[in-house]
Amino acid sequence: MTPDTKQTGAAHIAAENDPNRLRHLIRRARVVLWDFDGPICRLFAGHSAERVSGDLVSWLEGRGLHGLLTETERESLDPQVVLRAVDRRHPGSDLVAELEERLTQEELRAASSAMPTPYADPLIRTWTAVGSRLAITTNNAPRVVRTYLAGRGLADCFAPHIYGRTQELHHLKPDPHCLNRALRAMGTAPGEALMIGDAPTDHKAAERAGVPFLGYARNDRKAKLLLESGAETVVGSLETLLRLLRG
Image (cartoon, rainbow, N blue to C red; front, side):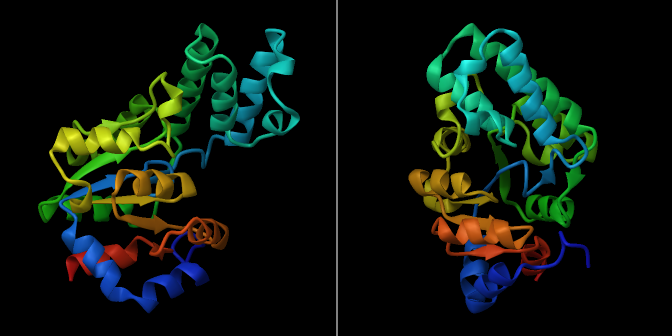
């Protein structure tokens, strides 16, 4: 088994202790809301997120804006942290719009080398085949999601329900805005949906939207963060869901 397909200890225990809960989550979901980077693919698997973050910081510093970020923000490995930090200080500004577009272009480049999450493709196709409707609710740019899904032949499983980052960055998860947009567009009550995510921000957004949550953790660190955030059901491999769905 590869590290990505091996179930983590904490996640394995969570799933094994209450298999009926996992089965119930899957069977009651008329609509499945997927986070993108993590459950569907590792977007920056071949295009370093750390380098992208550094490039955004360098671009800001080249404009004489070194003091705009704290030391912690400048050293962040997550480009979304840099983007959010600038938006907090200059919300809705041309600077934020330009920075967001630069991040989108980096995400588009990353999409060409993104690594599919093990079992994600067959799980998506199977869930579609059994009649559930799927949507993407992500902090990544919608253009990036559409590009990746088209390359995997998965676009029809989600279209047109892709809800991602806009220039209103205060609506990024953990705000439930993208989840609420999906639910309204699909005419679905929160309790009839299921959110699959790999980060505490996904869990918090689902909680605020009233949507049941299923955590996906590809390693122990991810599982620990999800469980500490209050997620009750976490799996270490999407194969678990695929087996239940096919069964």
